[in-house]
Image (cartoon, rainbow, N blue to C red; front, side, top):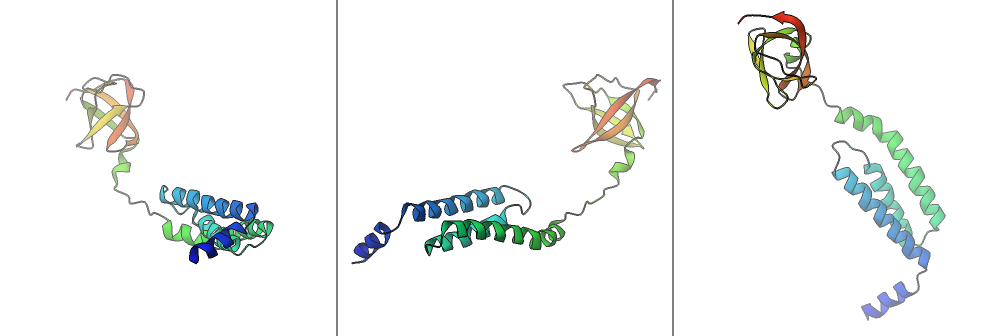
Amino acid sequence: MFATFLFNVIGNQSFVFWLMIFVWITVFTITLFIEFNTADITTIWFCVSALVSFFLALFDVNYLLQIIIFSVLSILLVYITRPLTKKIMNKTLIRTNADKIITQIGVVTKEISDDEIGEVKVNNELWRAVSVDSSNINVGEKVSIVSFNGNKVVVSKIKNNIEKL
């Protein structure tokens, strides 16, 4: 009995009906996949709009109206909620005071080469170091701290400056 009812419902629907069901399920799935694979809230509005459009398709609402509602609802949701979500998701940068050594001068205590991480002494602290241009820098040479790369400092060689350790 249920099978007969289901067959009558499915059999009486047009190609456009099934196409729009497929379209909204696909849009929902793709945007949900993107949402789960990004760190920020990026496509949740389109997931919601696709879900609404899917239910409209189930009630056999005209496909043009489905597309218009999807577009308008997506724009409205982005416009209304994006500033709020940006404020909530705003990650505050935690300063560690390590950035104070950028532009300072250090002395190489372990040779830095292209294939090996060296070591630099800056303000009586030892830092793992790599060269900015992958050049070899010998022990005792002075370097300028350019930036950080993870837990290592990126250094640049200072010409004609060698310090005895």
